[in-house]
Length: 324
Image 1: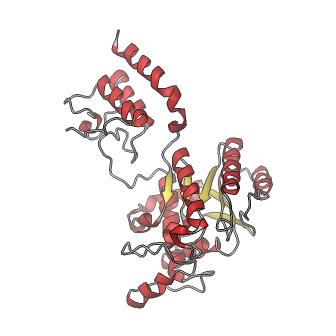
Image 2: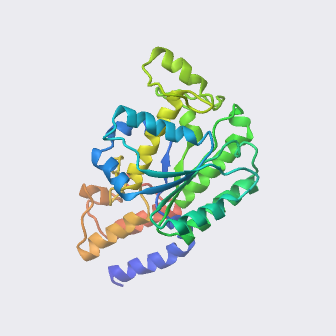
Image 3: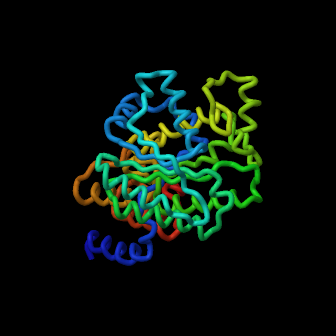
């Protein structure tokens, strides 16, 4: 049996059972991304303004993102100028309400230039059920299928003081887990509110961002005309996370490649298998550095690395380079 035929047999055996895992890696803007804002190349701010046209449905809590973006634009009107955003004065509501879906469809049908949709929550996650959140996730996913040229942003709900034992915590984790499993774009509203810049965790905080007052009492923080329900610094942090997210969506890879990440996209997944196949059999570009493709540590990059990587991704095998 040739190497190519062996590869086809392995793929035929493994891929059908693994179909749900074939989605691209999720892009999640959380508290860890705020500190990476200053790493974003200037060219990506220009690219985002040129390439994306936004529709954003939100009420007061969702306005925190826009306030934060405005604060950054005030700091540097050239570099951080806002892209085109059409704001709509409603949110995701609660209890499985999907009245926002026809609004989205009507807008997209009337505005073919729009290619990015955002909807935020008010207090709807705190009082929601598992079924209600499922309705939200399924409705968003159906819109993505109906409008394949439009990107859709998912969000968690804002903190409500309920802590790790509250319903909000459970429902936000439901959203996070689903987005991670299905390769979605997630703006983790609650997670950004939960951590101060020194990475101190405040799980029992509320949307008022109590830690913001303590932090800004001893650190320099920008001011604003008002951040709805909260402190200006909370809005500021969200503005930074939003730009990080968009730069990542636009193609910026802020994370260094690791062993097994053959295509240097910041994750180890099926796309790396395809990349290795192309390199081995079709003369495609090599992993950079090359040793990141030698996942089984046998000092060469060949079909055995492809099989090893498939085993890791779909069957829980040893991680790439675990035994090097």
